[in-house]
Amino acid sequence: MMTPDIKTNAYTDARQHSHPAVALTGELVSRDSVTPEDKGCQEVLRTQLEALSFRCETLIFDDVTNLWARKGSQAPLFIFAGHTDVVPAGNKDKWTFDPFLPAIVDGQLYGRGSADMKGGVAAFMAALTEFLAQHPDHDGSIGVLITSDEEGAAINGTVKVIETLMARGEQIDYCVLGEPTAEQQLGDMIKIGRRGSLSGRLVIQGKQGHIAYPHLADNPIHKAMPVLAELMQIEWDKGNDAFPATSFQISNIRSGLGVSNVIPPDITIDFNFRFSTEQTADTIKKRVHALLDSKSLSYDLNWNLSGTPWLTKQSALVAAADQAILAVTGLTPVHSTGGGISDGRFIAPSGAEVIELGPLNESIHKIDEHVGVNDLIQLTEIYRQIMISLLTQSK
Ligand SMILES: [Zn+2]
Image 1 (cartoon, rainbow, N blue to C red):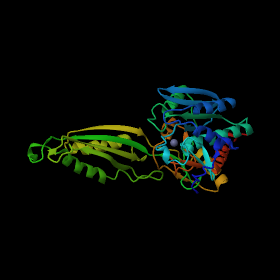
Image 2 (spheres, rainbow, N blue to C red; image 1 turned 180 degrees about the vertical axis):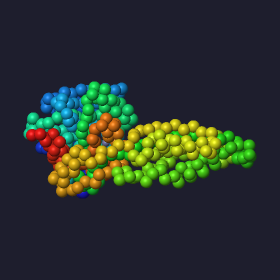
Image 3 (cartoon, rainbow, N blue to C red; image 1 turned 90 degrees about the vertical axis):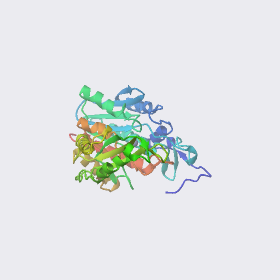
Image 4 (cartoon, rainbow, N blue to C red; image 1 turned 60 degrees about the vertical axis):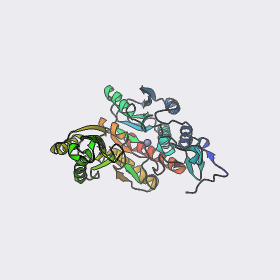
């Protein structure tokens, strides 16, 4: 890709583009919806969905705005899901253009959130608009679930909307999350699951004292080292067909008073497990506690489970996505469960088939984040063909 010419700053404003997915990406990028702010993004979507006769509800939980829109009441319920919030731009001076100016140069649309994931949201909005115009008597129902806290704490977003829907008995059958999933080329990868994520903060207590009189103290760093070494040696599992092996990683260790003559009173170790479906949070916790208890340590351990693993096995949705991607791009996508957690962890437990399929993820969260204009157009077509596969079978 060519670097934009900074001197001339020659660009086209994406909002002026003739393709609705590109123009809408531009419209959304121009709103600086840094998490959990929405800055009117959902209002733009709501207006478009209401014009298509969706029943729209704005669900506000604490400081987070969510949008749930549904058209039809029959099963199957097919939904697109996504988020309108973005991560901060970082140092604006390092950007070629203002991060909230949707500038197109050499076929790339620049701006914070263009790839993660306003582009995906705009592409599915364009796809469903086109689909409804062509197939007004389609099967089932169509839904759109948008949150504005995916990049933040993620406690008042998708998880709460799903709880609300479940309580009402609204069962989602198929969900396409428009998160950026492609690595080199649009369509080369979809996510059919994600690993679980379990974090722990371990505090091991010792006894503070003068470093020259170790027999009068009890060094917590020395107590921690062999335990950590053992934890690092454990093979938790070998993974399986869909998941890599469970991994244990230490992220932070803090101890010491910053001086060279004091044995510190305690040590704090932060760690994280990314785990496969071969484990549950409980099997991991039990094993860690068994090891710690076997060393007769004095410790505190606080756990935080941010997501259980989920997997959509070969299904109608995965097959429809494979077929649409092949037809539009000529590629057969890799079915991956790699990468970090996503809002799929909240939707899959409802019993829905969930996949993630969106544009390239190479520039997300970076300076000069961008998305290919052509990719947005092709992604719209992929989404539209998936809807045709799943929602016009009886026609
Ligand atoms: Zn995202």
